[in-house]
Length: 177
Image (cartoon, rainbow, N blue to C red):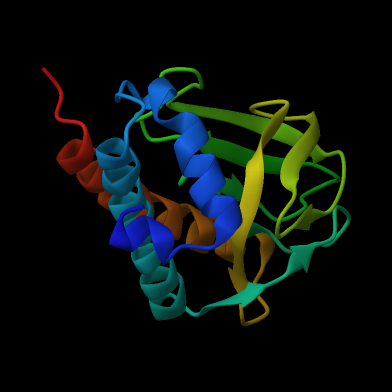
């Protein structure tokens, strides 16, 4: 097993191995290590950028919690879950293009969570951009109390910054063309 892959938590190692083919890579140790390298870089970006924007990590976000969050999945996708606004949330799922078996990016304005967002569990939607995601590794919420509009803007800004960084990581992993 490669050095970077072996340094990741066991559930992430297993997930990385399971998505190599859907990312268009051979099912090999070299591919796993390449994906692990990308995942580790995405984790670094997630932790760095959310902290820089005044967000803190939490283990879960209740489905009826007024706050929104940005979440990083085991597969290195991003999930934006906006704050509750008249009983619904704006939610965005960004796989960011490396996998071929899930949409690159999809959004739904009037989303409803089916259950709490929790580390180690998929995000499940009663109404949403996707039915469910892969399990969640990290969840970040705004540290300070914000209005719905301010919080939506902060979560959107962080997601845009992270998406750009993740796209760059993916391009280095799986060059297009």
